[in-house]
Image (cartoon, rainbow, N blue to C red; front, side, top):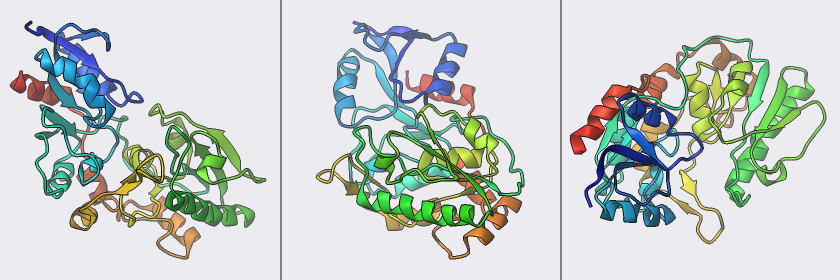
Amino acid sequence: MKAKAKTFIHMDHQGKGRAYVDALLSRDYVEIGRHDQGPVALILSDNDVLGRRAQLEPHREKGSRIFLYPHAARPFLPWDGIFPPWEHTTAGFVSTETQIKITEQFGIKVPPLHAVGWSLCPLEPFKPTRGRKVLFAPIHPNSNSWLSDLDLKINRAVFDRLYGLVKLGEISLKVRYLHSLESNGLNEVDHVEFIPGNPDQTYSDIDSAELVVAHQTFHWMSVARGKPTLAMAEWEEPRCGNHPDNFRRVSNWSKYRDLMIYPLDILAEDDTLGLIRRASQSDELVSTWRSQLVGEAFSPDKFVDCVEAYL
């Protein structure tokens, strides 16, 4: 059965594919329900590994093309020695050419990738702040609430540094966490605001802060919003897993770490307050990183043109 032209299914992951969906709709594509078994022209998915392959395979067998939008802000690092890419994926999309260069360091064949711009939130230029209203987003646990000992240790070390400044009256602190606070390795204390968050790509908490300390996607979104931002233990190898038995690290970190590591890290030096003040006043040290990893705004037409070249 021939796939119906200009139809697609979107396998949503925390709203991260919204810009891609809107781009297709603006070019007269029609979104079909995720569980519709009829043939469609293309599938938009955030990944092509583990159980997602079983969901994609019936559509591929009917002639649908499989396209990946970003599962997270950074490149799909699990392809690097953790989960090999699926041979049937048609192509994937990332923000910048540097993200493609990172993927080339994995030393394996990956699907064709195309840089189509930053899609997770509107971009804003850097704005200096006083750096006193700090938002901390700890490394979040998996959906089963498991978090590695390494990440628990990082969360606690960052919080201890920030809380020390709270007690000195140098900053106010808000902690935005996912799942339970305890599963992030933290406990409530006086004079700190703790707020549960949702993995829905909202950035209002980022916008209301004067400096953000975070990891992975929330960290990259903060940079994209023009907020003074600090990373957390960026030198540690990227990793994933939801249990000690499947916790794994990437294989080729040394080949691309210099392309990815964010220049300002809260655990990289002892003078935390001095670091906060420097980060709040200037983006001199991070502007190149932003241009290479976040890049320009998402281009709907470039994305759809790329898709149509494969159809």
